[in-house]
Length: 135
Image (cartoon, rainbow, N blue to C red):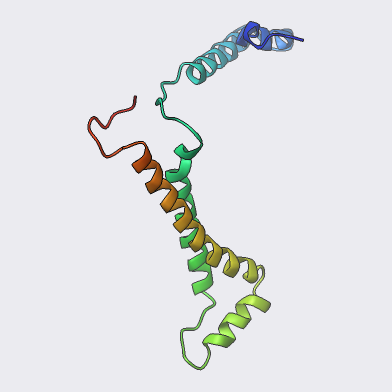
């Protein structure tokens, strides 16, 4: 079994060097070394964990709520006499309308779960106290 630390960017691309031009191979090797170096030496916070992505997940789900809400609004009729029929139309006649409606309804609940988790993470790590810097 090979040790992962002994593998570097030049050994990864060494097998393909015969098929590529020398200068192109050198350029690709240098680019790969920069990417690997950036990924390995990227500065991160000390409290990086599973809950770190809650804020960005909250933004993604908010975007999905906006998109599904706009798509549902194109078929919904806000009138007392036709509102129920328009919802039935969305559920039965619109392609994947049921998925849009249920995704929109469940996404709203999931946004609250993510928001509470995001707030709880900030309180747990005391992100509101000074100094507010990456540790």
